[in-house]
Amino acid sequence: MLLHDLRLALRSFKRTPILTVLMVTAIAAGIGAAMITITLYHARAGHPIWWKEDKLFAVALDNRGSDHKGEELQKHPEYPPNTLSYRDAKALYASRIPTHAVRMYQTYRTLDPGRAGIKPFGVQGRVMTADFFTMFDVPMKYGTGWNRAADEAPEPVVVIGKRLNEKLFDGANSVGKSVTLSAKQFRVIGVVDSWMPTPKFYDVNAAFGIAEDFYLPFGWAEALQLPPAGVGCVTPDAKVNSFVDLLTADCNMLQYWVELPTRESVDRFRQFVDNYTVDEKRHGRFVRAPNNRVLNVTDWLALNDVIGDESRVQVGLAAMFLGVCILNTLGLMLAKFLGAAHVTGLRRALGASRKHIIRQHLTEVVVVGLVGGMVGIVFAWLGLWAIRVLTFIPGPNDSPDRLVMAQSLSHMDLRMLGLALLISMVTGIVAGLYPAWRIGRAAPATFLKT
Image (cartoon, rainbow, N blue to C red; front, top):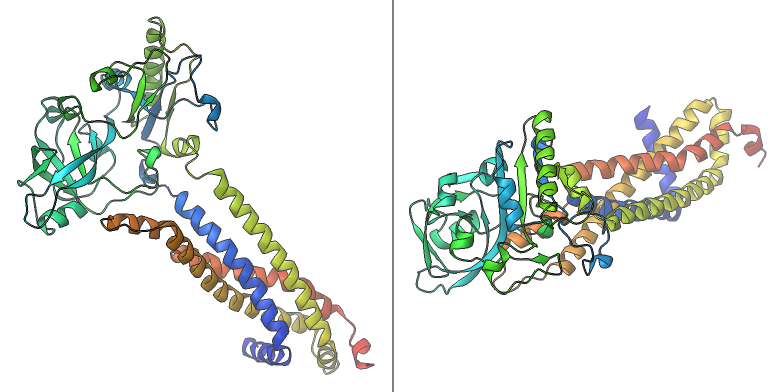
């Protein structure tokens, strides 16, 4: 019966090619627009470390002064800053409640490859404590990270990324070799394998940036006075004339994360954070009402609006546009079915039941929906390609990882393709259900008279 219904559908398409093309185009336009926005939303709304959802927590403290300037420009001025000052991170790091804790910030250095034909070039790195690799399940290609003792010394060791390892050592095992960062030599003890969490949850200020080229023990922050990528001073009396001033001023520059394995440890650590701010308040800091946050990855991304309201609005608008396309397709199908009502009436007179008539017409609309879905996938692919081309303009010395990131944010994976086909099938059924029911309920005598 299915093959018979398909043959009837193909004959119907041949009788009304223009209407068929219009219906396919309407569905394709709606699905193309919907899949572009859903794909972009899907890429931004990913959870890169879901298996530790109930164990990893970001910490935020509201150390702003009562008259912090620029606060009125923030989307959510009631939220605390998403970074900590150096002194606060140091104080919280002293707690032994977390099984792992990381204080860190991003920095930039100049790397001298020490090879003929390759000039010194800038690299992006991260200065952090030893638990980073274990806490965030960073995959290692060669070697390993360092221990906490290397943070304190600090030891002249470095972990480099896979791309930098390929550029400097042709991808070979570089453990034991040396690299020179801003005239200081460091011994390579590990190489990070391909790793690009999207979004980069541990640093929401660069949520869709690429992974770092190198990683240094935290002790080098003070030893080399490594400047942070971003600093925000939040009190009127914060005067910073040198790196040393950053260590005691209310200027936020570090991300701070902890791993808490149990609900009881989460409660204990939150109490520890609250007690710390209360104690600092007695010394004239934290002048505002308590506003501390210890949030898991999902809540942290939501607090910092990583997905963005614009993405949600775009998905809503695309859904509305798809609805308009469905209504247009419904009208076209109704016109098409009523135009061929005399054929339907003749089939009814020859013995076809209402159920058979409705099933045959539903088969037709499902075929139209699937064809429209496949064309819509092509439209979506072209739209995502255009977005990628317009938003990513590579430079002469650009990192290949940036292209990978741009592609990952505008790439339709198998789940998106499956969703597109499902939406197209549902769209065809929704658009054709009423016309099929209407023509199936019509009395055959009405059409035989004409």
